[in-house]
Amino acid sequence: MKGEVAIIVPIKFNSKRVPKKNLRLINGIPLYHYIFSQLIELNRDWDLFIYSSNIYCAGRLEERIRYLPRPSWLDNDSIQTNELFQYSAKLLPHRFQAIVHPTSPFLTKDSIQACIDAVVQGGFDSAFTAEEIKSYAWYKGKPLNYDINDIVQTQHLEPIVVENSGVYVYIKENYAEYGTRIGRNPYIKVVTKKEALDIDTEQDLEQAKLVASNNRFVDYEVYSDSKICLKSFPSIDHIVFDFDGVIADTLSIMKRAWGEVIKSLKNKVTIPHFKRYEEHLGKPFLHILSSIGIDKEYWKEIHDLYFKISAKEATKVELCDGINSFIKDLRIDKKILSIYTSKPRKALENIQAYQLIKQNFHCILTADELPDGLKGKPSGDGLRYLSEKTCITEQRSLYIGDSYSDAVEAKNAEYIFIRACWARIKDQNYLPNEIVAFKPSQIYEIMT
Image (tube, rainbow, N blue to C red; front, side):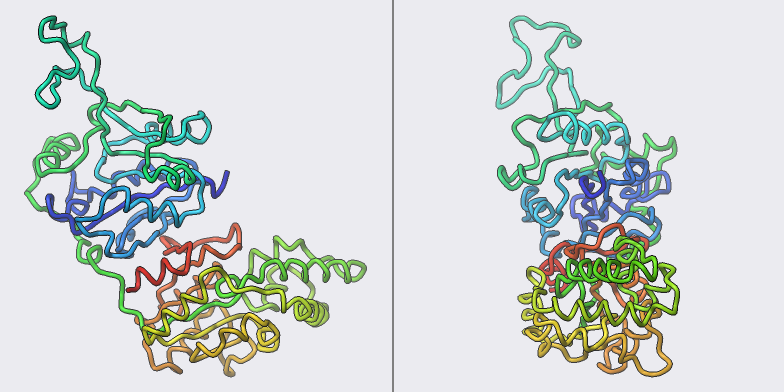
């Protein structure tokens, strides 16, 4: 089911033991690219995320892979594994979550699939990949899997099962309860020696090169785009918010107003179901009517009725969880804040939740207040206009939106864009390798 499974690939670019490990080349390909060649072959309803403090490293990867940014303090050597993944487990709403490490470049899609299926369908509460080793093993000065007085042949030894740190699958609520990625009833997927190769030392890296090719490569040969991958999150001075879905939860009111319009005008004009309308959220209202094929002669009537009904419901609108404290933190940090929405000014002013926070914003731009000659979303004109008004360049500006139209607006204006996934819009398209956030606090943490 869509939205039920998340696969996260944790990537760190400042590794110490093997310098720039994820950027090192194996057979001419950067290490961290290998695992994605397998992941993109899996179920397309599963969400793929790069989990990194860097947002520039996906340039040559599959377009549907998104960034799940993490704060840079999680890159510290003192951070323990459970701490790193507790952060992502809390953020992601997906019930089933898989960690797939790029340092296991030869893992196959079949092994990854088997681990996910075991938890989603097989009744296990977690899964991981491991290697079986049949060797005479010792632990703390004592034989582990054989009797020194009755030494059997190695093929008859009880195998030692060793985690290879390639794949871990768990259930969100179990991670919250146990605080670790392996539950009480794990499925263990035994993989081949090649798949089990985990690059933790220079020796491991050399072995991986030999596996991938018969030719040896020069030590420290790194990805040509390594400078981009090592860039930190840019310094942001100006944050622009979309309103609907990002600041305030207005979706249910939109749905009710649209339903009333359909009901009231059913004998005059055929109006599509709200799902069609929702696909175009973020655009100016009349643009949406055009996009969903409504005859122009009915636009004014639909517009007036829709916003009349919405105004009656405006007192029921609430701020999104965490948005108020996020705005306050940004103000304390002396950031310049703006709103750019496709709502008309009158409709915005009717919303009580807006009245509670509007004093925090330096500029508020609505669809009906764009200066003459400027186009609405997703032209990029609105954001460029806000940059002129605030005297802050597009390169130091961030737009937080919840729709495809918002993403295109930001791209056209050359703004950094973060998709607010706490909004309840479903099934909208994404631009290649978008940055996503599931809580307002996540954005604050990666900015500071």
